[in-house]
Amino acid sequence: MDASFDIMDPIERAQYAQIKDALINCLLERRSVNATVREAAMLMGCPIILTSSSYRVIAMEDLGKEVDDPIWQDAKRTGYCSADAVRRFEQEGVTRDVQGTQGALLLSRGLAQKIPRILQQIPIHGKVGAYIGLFLAHRAFRDSDLILTDFISRILSVILEQSRDLVLQGLEIRESILSDLLSGVLSSEALLRERMETARWNPKPVFCCVLFTAQSEGSKIENADYLSQVFTHVVPTSFSFPVPEGIFLLINSDHGGVLEQKRARLSDLAEEYRLYGSVSAKFSDLVHLRAYYDSCLKTSVLTKKLRIAERITRMEDVFFPLMADRLSREERLALVQAEYKALEAYDRSNNTDYCQTLKTYFEHGCSATEAAAALYVHRNTLTKRLARITELCGLDPTDGKAMMHFYMSSYLREL
Image (cartoon, rainbow, N blue to C red; front, side, top):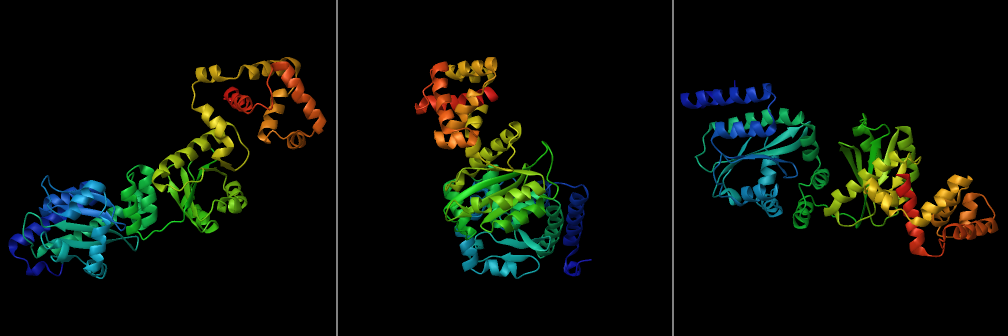
């Protein structure tokens, strides 16, 4: 029995018991967070908002009525409490009071002067993971409201602890921002700046995505939580957390050389845990994170399709096959260079390897010396081969556009 139960009048006691039973049923029936917040709002007769500790909206219910409050309206429009509101909470001492109070707190000053509200923090796995707000927009405050808000918070704490995605979004502010960028929830540059300001996050200018996936197609990384911490430890200027496809690592630095410095160690870890890592191009516009992440996904799929041996593959390493893979079979057939087809036919009929010779020459910057070393032949031998290739198919190795078309054609054929 709650300590304040005895001071309630009989009507409040009956209402209190009814609401408690209904909320317990939400828990026993394993209802979602949204369904539980909706039920609580209807039982309490007031709008309710639930946010993560980074002030991202997890659920909100207005009972179909207009809530004439700027915080509520901003949250409904953007999915967050605004940075201005967060600053005012701090200036008015609301943040301090809520974080310093174990139970529910009635707020009726400052931002809440027009519409009083009951606020309470919600622990998730021992940390403040969420906040709940009951907006007394359409009725007066009752003494039992504080006790019931506390009970609602306890019910939601249990439900949130069982909801992995919400916990990930709520416990770490920066990871929450990244999660929203990846999911497409956050796509506005202005809103991103506001969220980063709220999180007091001043990132370094260069970003780079790395996506680690399981070696076997369709498999899960069982120890993803642990490995996320390991990757973050190896690259301190990074953020890492599990995603449905594997483990996401975002490297943030003053320059683009961090990955190369840590690549050997990351390759060793990938080898040890049977993972493949795909790396995006470097970028500075974090609002487009999803596009760079998608490039990692495509690189990962293509790496396995082409059976590339390296554990860490950069998007640049598979750029040409990545472009070719976007085409239909008929389009690939139509775009293969005629000179490539002629040389390929000659190789097949005469058991030669002129196509690979020219491809190696292109991959080594059209340097006869470097290409010869890669092919384990004398430079003069390579020069003679290049001349023979021109005789056979008419391709000039000094023609940059023709060579690029040839190189692309090799992947069009391979796919």
